[in-house]
Image 1 (cartoon, rainbow, N blue to C red):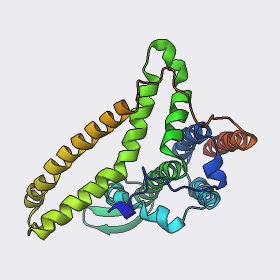
Image 2: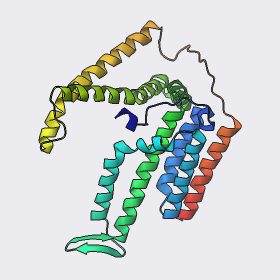
Image 3: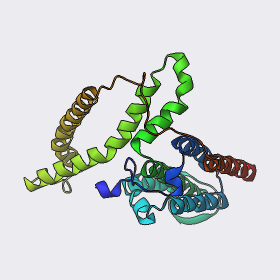
Image 4: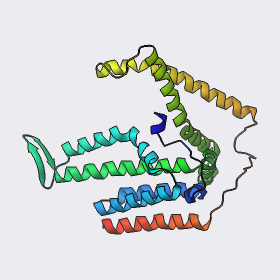
Length: 265
């Protein structure tokens, strides 16, 4: 299970994407999401896919590893495809049996929405795979810094978001251990009706909640033991700074939005 989830994991490296400022990567994620929602044709989505492939190549992360990271959302993508094939009508009719028909608009929308979901998951995975958790926290804190004037606990919010991302693979690993322990005691999670399977999940959910609370308490105690008192007066080992590469990344992202907006119009 852990090997099939990319979001929340970090792969150390020295690639071009690894060396980018976390703030530029976070801004790029937002701009790329806007570009994804602007795309409305096969040419536009093809351009976005090529863009993602180029980003993966620059990050030196295995493409196979990235594709494996999509496995947790395969079911959601398949469900989306089925819903659009059944409910979205219009255009040429490709297949019809009685009331059931597959039409051109349904096929097109199914492809577009599944691609949209896949692209967003991949680019989010690429962010966490190439950005250390502490760098991600610092980047979020710097971007949200103007909110401090509104008395918002910016540092604490950024830290919570970073810890939440970091705990995704940890909780999945814990879930995997609990499932194996339950299966060794005769538990069956694959047979029976849907209601039975949900009932069989209770021996997993309860220990997982207990383990999560225990880990959270251990983390809080460890932070207090190291003198953590929030963001006031903290110094940083690594100072963030924009470089020419970061500026070019943002320029390319804006150009991509402009191009897709022009193409859409």
